[in-house]
Length: 48
Image (cartoon, rainbow, N blue to C red; front, side, top):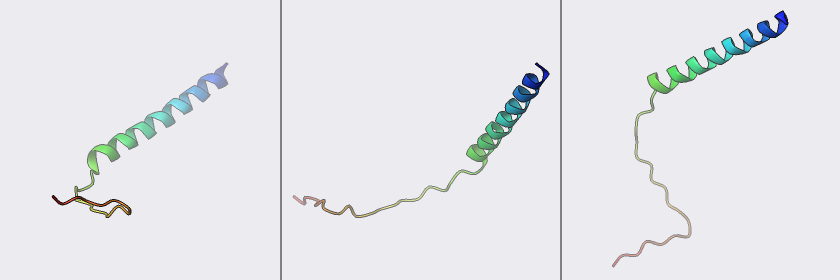
């Protein structure tokens, strides 16, 4: 049974580290917004 507690502790710690890392990456490193325009092949724009 102690090995189960050790395993759960390691998995919980690893999950907390991963969650914290993702949170920091999502809040501190936001990409700068930019406009992207790409022509779509096969689509014609009607001009009336």
